[in-house]
Image (cartoon, rainbow, N blue to C red; front, side, top):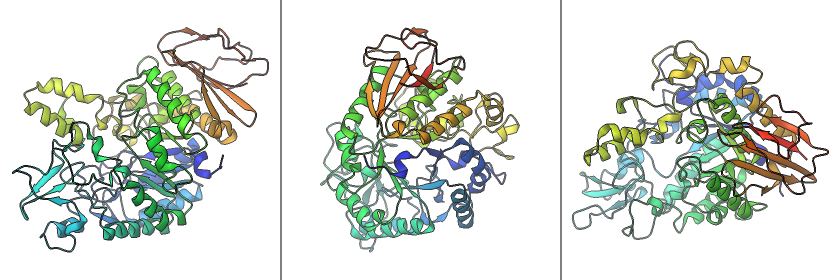
Length: 544
């Protein structure tokens, strides 16, 4: 097992526009992150991942980039970023940026040139096609719209967009495009950043000939196409291998076998990945499915490639709302989910606010939402004749805005996030759920995260250990063993609202067991494991 710093890291995701506003304009910013670096350091994480803050028209919250070398005014200035990097490194915190290179904004100078005429030198920097029998070139849909093609009146052709119409896809077959991207990556790496989270990086290669899809609603045809590994190996050869960095690819629509091709240590592409068999494909908690996913990925990856563990981020509803109990057992459930993510194989990711048990939000009107994907889908469904209230209700739980409400720092106006008007409404529960309360409570969710992260730094078994599920057919109880270099840890999770009796496990010698952490404060080492009474959402970790 090759030991690397990035395998041992815990990553904290900062969605900057919702983190901390330093100038009262209602948007978080880079200076706001600087103001909270001591807080992040106190949590104990190693790496900060910051969502895109490049110059952008902001149609998709910064994922529509109009200048890769400038910073959007809402976020601050280049000197702010340089200060952030310096201050983070002083605290031994590494910083990774979002790399968004499947597409740009339609306001990017490259695209403005590309659409100006068919013979423009940058025409082939994007993907243009003629109509087919008076319609779009094929029947593909995008993530955000019913068609992946937009007709452009200037030249009479269609351009491809895997996301919003304002986000045209780059043509990675063009070597000039690749070199321009590689040059941009070197610019930020030379500034001293510590890596990239790579947005939908497996969408870069497109299907040859752009054939119609048999089932256009299943948009997996946008990803993992022939040529993708050639692009990533070229990226590694020309850029990535020259820096000691973390690269994590956002890679939807992959099996473990396909995923390994992106991160296997002898292939020289990426370091690790996000797959979405849970966050995209498991709408609510499904214990048996989750266990099966964990086992399959471990079986394929162990000793060969590195995985990531997460249940929420800026695109997915907060984990305690979606996969736990955000009511009566919010504290216990938050701690249980944290225990699970930090003790399963792979790099744990903490999304801002998760460490205090922030919950998803349910706004009453579509007007309160900013999520372009949700708003487009709402319009599409209402235009089909569906009842607007029913459509809103069906889209609410999985809206990306569930996780994008501002960070809840204290119980003052707007939760201490801003002195202005927040860009998106606050979650109404901020007076009860906030950082100030958690820092004052020794048994809070924040303090529990601190202990978990500290344990991981001190115990390699949490990082490099093998994984063995002891409870495969149990729909409420999750018990597994992590073992490494003579150490064996037992993790017990009652992921339910019920009280359970821990089953007897053959070969489990309790004589020298040591309780490492528990989310109920009254558990003692002397209490037996076999037939122990497990309360709702109880989590325990033992060294055996």
